[in-house]
Image (tube, rainbow, N blue to C red):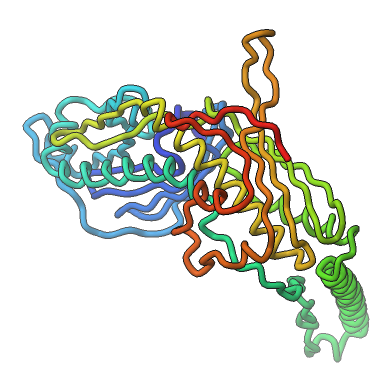
Length: 399
């Protein structure tokens, strides 16, 4: 393991593709670290984003098969020892594909690049296609955030198990001949046994106290869960706050709520702005290492945004109906910041407001939530929204 400086270039979210003269590999992970799988082994890496400082360590062995380079510009010694970790970089503006040495961040020399393309061109294109698919799927997934919602059926609290390992009594010093014939040695042995036993008893006591505290906490959480399901507003507040904190939104999404009663909930959502959305579609060119990137039409982008904010509403409603069985009605309104041309300042504009009731909600197909069109689904309820044929969402007055 060692430290080194290098430059890193971001490609598709969480995926890097690498190739060597031994074969090809894939890297999973973000800017702060990840795992690379290749025929030469498995390597873990981490770093400090923005500094160029990173470390890596090989943790496994790979295939023994090697790719032998055959080029007039490479002598036999180079053929045996050259190893290149290839990084594929896609320019998200132009679609230009660059093949770089991931260790140096530099372009490959022409002879090495030529051999690599000749021997692994089809595989590189295949991997490039995977990267392109991932880029498009990441964009398309914004419209199905609700794909994991569940039926509004009350569930009992699932207590977390205690993970602390119970202490084990270490081996005590064995009695030997020297302890029989020399009393000071036996005295030291007994002293050592006392210290080990004392430390063990303290460790057992700490473990038992930690286990009891864990059990007390779990019982408290179980009761809070039970009271929340029975309509206790304070418990419902805690349950909802905890559940919302566990959701990982693709873009910043802020949520405020107010319990009008144990049966009715009002939610306001601050949606991400449309300017934050990925506005391009990628496609692998018919030949060579080229990715065609085109800008989404304004209508396509507006439709994606409308479906995304609708999907946010479905995901939130599903969560609330499931964890709080006494809730019968949810009024959910969402807004975004838009430029007011009359003042030059941004202001909040509501994009839709919907009233959802439990009886109608329970009729949805929760066996296959990805088949639910979020935009159309909201239309089955009492909804206020004004969407033009261009999919532009005009401001409305919420309920």
